[in-house]
Image 1 (cartoon, protein in one colour):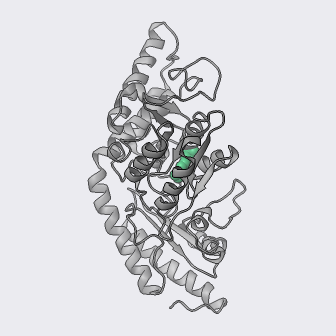
Image 2: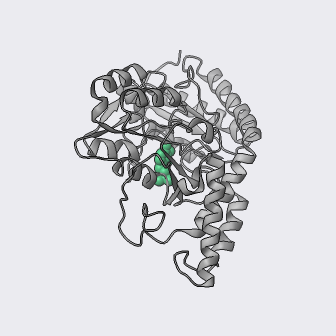
Length: 380
Ligand code: PLP
């Protein structure tokens, strides 16, 4: 038996996306050309742009195709930099935002123990420094804890104290579970990535509202309204549009079903270790992510034993070498290094079954209790 509980890392591509990927991969035209084959490719590109724009509640001309969430986030931050001004982001952002902000000398705002960006700290900072800020970035939902961020408050503070700054939200984890069009309506820049909602890996988009003045990062043929040069990945884009259509059309039903399975998982695990609550449980959370901090245990050891038993999960941030660092998200929430080093993220998706959950409850219960017993830790 196996259980794939790592859908927040990537979720399987769905059938409609595979069909589009295969079909469009056979098209020969480059959308930038002028002959008939090129025009056919261009038509498909623009149709996909319109579809994605309509699902995200923006005009087609505001959708810029990219290679995924990382590129969209980098473009949003680096493309918004202005002389003498700095970016601001929450300390619990994905590294694609976090590292772009710190490298640009920006400011990170902490989060509460329950995983919500600290609005008081943000307000204090913007009150003092609002004029010196060029972009404010707060994600829609956190990829480690699933906590949904108070975006309307973030925009209100940003417009009040930094009217000249762009507002960016990384919505990469959201489209399958939340209404991105509604939640991001006040934002100038919104990142999405296809492989988190049933599309292919290596394809994404950045919504760039007409209100923003973004600078391109790539030089070349001037595609994507001069904002992202390079021949677009047409098959990936068409597949992303198909996946997004499917995700939006089935969101309510999928959320209902996945929320039920997540509840089952949480109840099952809390009967194994009643003293440990999922991280961020007191906040508003997406239905598919559950995070535990097993203080005193080590994520790497837990994941190794789970992997051996066919359970695929993850911890906090993993670097390119696969080595695990204590989660910067949990540290940014004021959790101790011991808590952040023992984190376990279980993320469900559309293909998750009850059998997988039953199996996971048994194995995770056994593995963590065994490791705890070896270290003399008692779950209370
Ligand atoms: N932002 C968030 C919140 C993510 O969870 C991820 C991926 O895990 C990314 C950005 C990066 O997206 P991609 O893998 O498409 O580069």
